[in-house]
Image 1 (cartoon, rainbow, N blue to C red):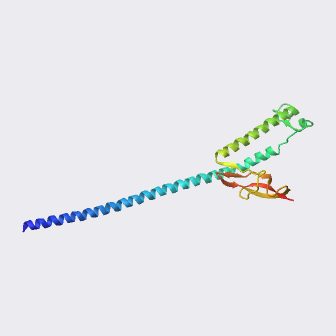
Image 2 (cartoon, rainbow, N blue to C red):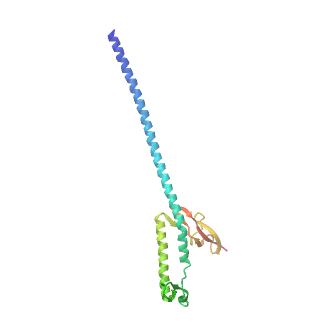
Image 3 (cartoon, helix red, strand yellow):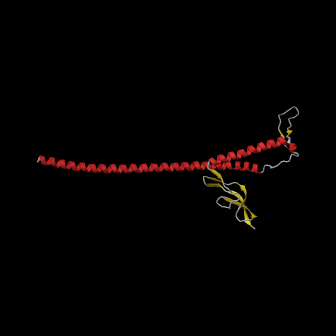
Length: 198
């Protein structure tokens, strides 16, 4: 009888062990699936944070560019309205350069026409170089000027502020304010005059 009890206990123990093994396998599978879900959630979180950071950088770039554009506009307008030709008559009387104070009151001496033209040319070259430098810096940030002059009017890129008679309909004939894109997205439309066939 003792032998039968031992056999019964051995059988029960093997069955118990198999049951415990299955239970442990199920628990391990459950833990593995939970770990995989946690890993996937963490990867999704990382991707979401990277996307948010990228959006934040793009927004900051847009704000910085928007702040720079009025200065660039002003410089470009200064270049557009710079006199193309100054006559020599009366130039020396109109422009004077400041001189250090002297015993006589430190009044400026008139520039000679040649000196004025040389200084004017130097100034104009400097302003032009500054505009080109700003254009290059903006381009490196992903900013591009919208081509407008002579192009077909496109409301996605151009804002018509005036209509003038012309030989064809819908051609940009004048640009009042340059438009810009940032990484392909319009951040400011070009303000233009558009032709209308008479």
